[in-house]
Image 1: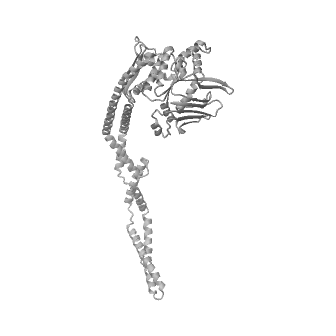
Image 2: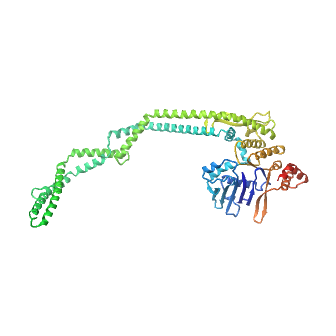
Image 3: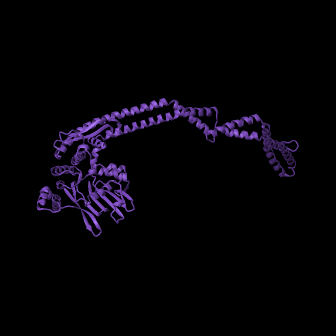
Length: 559
């Protein structure tokens, strides 16, 4: 329930701080006084887009803040799920706009996104303006009314989850079909590529090995000359270093008796001799294996040329990449060859999902048909007192062409205000006043099924007057008596007189310019206001007396 509204620097409002009460409240005021401005401010609190041009001229910042009592409504889980502080008796929603175009929103001093503010707003306030009457022409709105009365939200959620799985299966099936079509067109080319790579019998790492062998054979003479020279220096019969080192060690051993240091040097030479002898043997071994075979070099270079040609052709740099491409081609060819099986499996999965959807959709249809009977009976009872004694209202439920997001039903509200006119879609045949009454009856019915703290009617009385207006007032008054707050912006004295609380919006000229004001009227102020609504600018004694009769003694004494 809306407890308090604070507005600062919003269009024509410099400062407004007004308290709201439970039950049925009415707001009156001349056209252009600022009622729509207040609604616009509330709209911003509910998550509507902001425009810096709505700031009062000359102001740097606009603040709109509302206090709500949520103690009778189960919203704790919503606040917990969105990591917001929860205060059941005083939930504070604030919106700030700056002249620079910046907008910020807060719930209990926690910054929130506009989307989250909008989601919370849908749970706090329902603003019914004249343009909402257009909803009667929208099948989605009519469907939602049936689902609300049918209380099948869980069933609808289960169906929509099943429908999501069905759509996903169809998408996978379509993607596979498209892939198969693309692959089939390229099948011959892919098979040629795979055969070429497979025939090459590539091995990972062979390119490096072949390049080393090619370099070695290309420089065979140079290698052999160097090895021969090293072998001659190390193992030559006349001046071989190995033999010379051995002789030097023996000579030092011969004098170690008279020169002890010579023994140490001799031992070091013997260690070097062993290492040098091993080196000489390895050099000799390499020398024995260096042979130049022109045919082998041609074979190695031919293999390298084949590898280089493939790498160039397939725009890669290594044999490893060629092997990866070969494996990928093999996988694609295998997929194409097994595509019939994969396609059949996905088709079976899609059919299973479709059957599940159809079963859940059938359950939805049954619940909607039951709800339709309840709606028809309720609307008949609600519309007859609103000046439609011969009204007929029917909820038509037909099968749609296929499964959709809300099932397989088409819902239409059919209407006729008299017995001689065939029923047709309500938006096509109902007058403006009739549509207003139909919408009020629907809202009253829906409000009994949905816990919504506050409902605001913006001139829902358009096109009606007299006793019909009085009956509409009774409906809104009754709605306000069942744990909810109903606020009606009205131009009709019959409706204004039914409010338990009466607010007036008016303009005031100040040194700073025109300003919109709003105040809660006292009992005598209500009499004056309703008398003016009855007679216009010149208030007569008869109008005052009539106003008192509309208000009634009980109403005056209770305020």
